[in-house]
Image: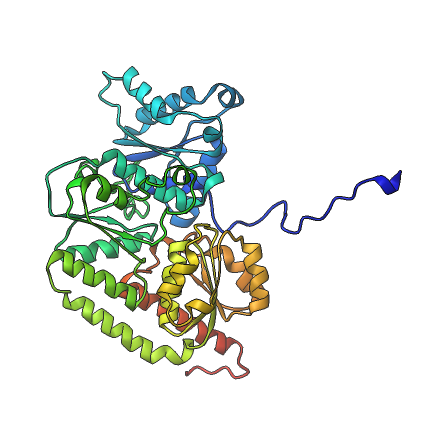
Length: 470
């Protein structure tokens, strides 16, 4: 009988627990909602989802981040969560008095088929005479069909579709900066103001997730794009969006409807005729040049001299430091659009990217990297839908000189005894992760200095001579 017992074949690709190179969709959606003035995010699902997201964001931004939950129970899982959502909204209004409530769905609420739009309409109808009822917006963000970036961009699109209206043409420019740091957002706003551009930024969490010190606790931090501004997006003269991938991957809704507008900028172009310009996240000289030329064309103003000077100093730094970085081999990982931009920057400074890895799975990463990295693009190993364990295995074989990515890859760099250049999200093991610069000439200058110094420090630490001059 023993010979007849079937033997289970080993599943080579199955591991019970993996360290994913991404986080959940509603986390990204919550960040986008924090970029709307007076908005409180509500996670429609289990309490654990909201608790995890709060803890994860607080560790990166080092700020209090309030995110509410509809607190699903066994009963709501069976009979639907509308009653829980109504109770959550009622409590948020009573405690926070928000201007906007932004709802993110979860795997559980999506799986049971809750109709969030109808639930919000029912709440409005039941409280029609209550002046404290805020604006509502909701986004579909189940983690089983995407990453935190899918949730972020899905929510940005939902904000745009909810609030943009047909208004008279104005001189505003819609800016969709993607998921960049709070310092990047502030630098970008300074650049727009220097060009004399009246902009609407969606989202703008530069203040809400990076606050000054308070004398008293603010339940809702100041900052964010006002709803009044969002309603004017339909009359803007142009939209600029950073990132060639955004949420153009294989989400369920887009497979069912090929004509569906993917992004906020696409929706505005299709519905209101607002011209859309899409470009890489502007990291490095080449990609930043494209941004500054576009802003000059849109505004009709010349590029301010201060940016020409920043560009010149950056080129000088490239010349000064090329011998420390040229020919080094790097592994880059993180969100797809950031990986594309960082790979283009590294290709520009002479660093050979041997692996470009992401937890995203748009299917577009390879072609975009070949486009933005003309020197090494075709020879780069490009892989999506990866986890950190697989990246670690690949790094052991590839033997890179440095890693470029978020702090989740630190253990890989530690095991390989190589430097890690921390960029993107999350940065959980250093102060100021939310204030890292990536974009424009200043961001490239900071990144180049970090890479050059990391290579010099590595050389010093591994030298038999403790020299102090390079």
